[in-house]
Amino acid sequence: MLKPVRKQSLSEAVFTQLRDQIVNGELPPGAPLPAERVLCEALGVNRGSIREALRRLQQSRLVSVRHGGTSQVLDYRASAGLDLLADLVLPANGRIDPRIVRGIIEMRSALAPDIARRAAERRTAAHLSLLNATLVRMREHAGDLTALQDLAVTLWSDLVDASDNLAYRLAYNSLRATYDQCRDLFTHVLAEETSDLAGYTAIITAVSNSNGEVAARRARMLIERGERGIKQILDHLPANLSEMRA
Image (cartoon, rainbow, N blue to C red; front, top):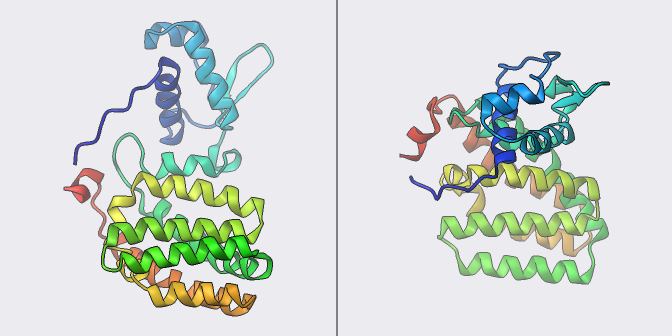
């Protein structure tokens, strides 16, 4: 499957290359980054692009800038945030790490029930209106797996808003950005979950009735359907992502 080539600025290209070397261990924790002059010569870019890339690496908590301007690689497992997940699940070499996918799915399964519970406790009439509107659209697209997949993402986003929890919102944003990187891989794997309109209806009904325990239980039941499907294929993922998309 061919996709449009995304244009990159020089600083973004430098950031991406250095980030990938840090994540895959070519630049191990504690290692110093080459001096700006060396990076300019090696990468063929100007010093402004190098400095912008280094700022982004620092903001991502992949490097620390020490006294005197030298940069040292950090252990991203101890310092980085959820935003790095998208880069880990779909690295530049096209190889998927099943452990990363499994971790993302397990985090999703852990958060979803409490998101539904909090939504039932804190939802407003405006939230219910959005949730029911999305549910209607899902019924209108019954059988269309791609549309249902997109609408399920929207419904969960609506539930996160209804939960009135900023931490959940930020975590959801990172998980969604990660999911968007490889969404087409899971359209059919998640079909049992995204096609379960009765399950979504049960969640929204519980939220409407302010019944947090039922909302959480129904959310857990629904999410576990997708989790089972994904975990069943993890051990059979091809080493290269392009093989799965073929």
